[in-house]
Length: 569
Image (cartoon, rainbow, N blue to C red; front, side, top):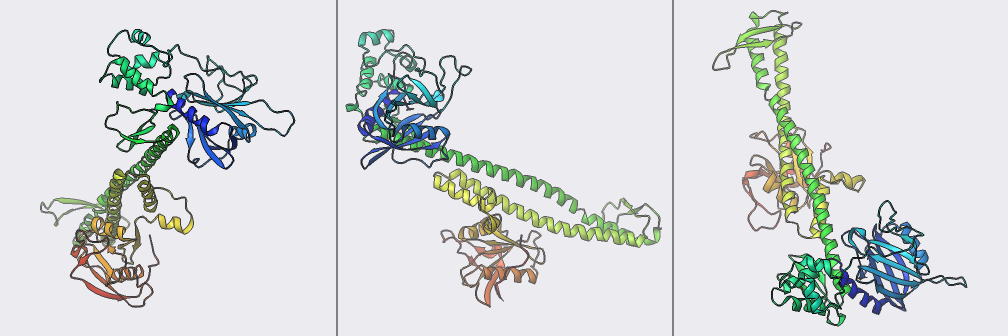
């Protein structure tokens, strides 16, 4: 149920008991459309919230104010006119969703100022908060100023006379008798909820639908009488209705239209509304955070895809290294048939099963031998480039796998705390910019693993924690990658990426990776640390084991001094 006339009726009844005769002690702004008022007498204090939100306009007591923002002009204006003032009257204007709180201000001058009226119009997109001088109904200030260009019905501007919003011709629900009700529904046994909503004052969509829902079990007039009975505060049963942890309504009566809903009872309507809007706020926060994190992952996914496309093109060009080698070999085999100054030569390709003729471009300024050596240099350079590109592709695949796991985590996140933890993780992975600076910011940009490049050009990954170790071993490491870990000592898992599936890893790279394993272990202060290494295919994470614990075979051991390479990516 949105904040309707019946809800306000009960709120007013409870506010009179709690706030009449109390003093406004403090006013602060929660956000652009919501204000919190600290109101009390003696040692007793209450917080009242007034909101002109387009979807969640409301007025009710709250346990504590939400975190405030910088005070606006209106907050300061209200403080000037109302602070230390005494609340003398609280009323609902007719059946409208309009709350009027009359305040007698205090002044150090002998002449007492005239009473002021704080008016909260809780009417959807037309909601407003207005301060009026009751002596002449002159508007002093408002949250939203409305001039003649914005509305032809009334102006809400300082200096103008306050008038109620345009009124609709509807029937009073408390004086409506059976004959008038029968005439209203045209004698029908069944009606649409819109007929009741459009004809009966104070009826919002939820109340109108409730009459129709109850009419399925009894006569329409009896169903109407059941609902009207709850208009008496003595019969109210304030409750919050939830469905799958999502708030449906805060209601002063049981709602038969939601038979599957979970109901939580409250002593007052203010408490039920507080719980309802707390749940609404939480859901909106979660939806907003979920959307922001989803957009961050999509942006990262697009970035990685562009990188992948670029690397595929680079690899395709690098694969031509073998062509350069063949061209060089053919030139060497035919030096006697080539003369300096030729721009190209056509030779039979002995390396092809078809033995087709191959046209090889030449530099006329170079000798035949120099041309051959130039092709061998291109071959060597392209081969080195291919190795580097394969390393980059390997890194990219690791990033894509990490991203897929993050997407899975986000899809299953069901609490705000989980989403906030994911945000922290996304900052660490570099998907979201960090507000931190200096060393912490640099650390965050490294992603879920520490990454190093060995002197031989191999990428080395080091886990940050048990979860990172698991991700490294389960999702990132390939069978021909090398795995290292300190022998029987707690520490990080270390992986040497081997995208070319080489049969061995150069000893300088093994030593650097072993030093990293020792450095990121409990033995990082020791001088001679044993580090086991084996191919990743011989490392098994047994099902049900504690995160980070593995079983491995065919290992060898190196003894190293803990150290971190100077070159780090």
